[in-house]
Image (cartoon, rainbow, N blue to C red):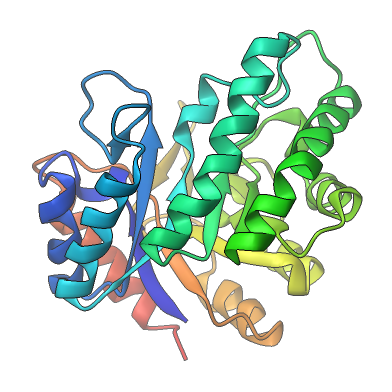
Length: 275
């Protein structure tokens, strides 16, 4: 297993092309680029004007020079364009973004595209899964051609909250290019047992997000690895049991003041349990 980090960890301190070599210097072997539509946050690559072969290629070159990989692309823009939308034009835009991401991931050398899938309130989980499966069946040939996997993430939305939901989606899409991107922190936050989830996912697990989780009387919060309740020895043990040898991608939000500390402390905590 190797360590990677998401744009949200350090890009509020370092812009993307500086963040990639900084991640390498901090001991990370991969970098997950967010493809977002979030105004002036400055994270990752902004859709649509930076969602291009030129911009992705520049990030890939920065990673090559730093001696690390672009582990994955995260389509944060799908929080605006739901592939489950009841509006045909929104769903069509989401479909095109997902399809286009496959060739851009190939340019970056990334093997996984993370899909955070939302659900309109007017749909039931079953209806939303039906919509998502239809879109992914349409997009899967592009990913297959690019040798890229779409990873459906458990982001807390009702359509893909549990392992049963996730496995139903990928089974129905029925393509080697559609698997699960499992977020350990999200699973714990939603009351699941991440160790049991990982064992059930087995060969359908494309990649893993890591963040810790802590519950207090006042709130539930994402925290640095080791500062929460997750048993990381058991989690990494389960990953070893299913022969997972991919990236552990850190996704703990950082600020300009906390970015390096988050990366260093989480790295050290995870390394205690890595084979």
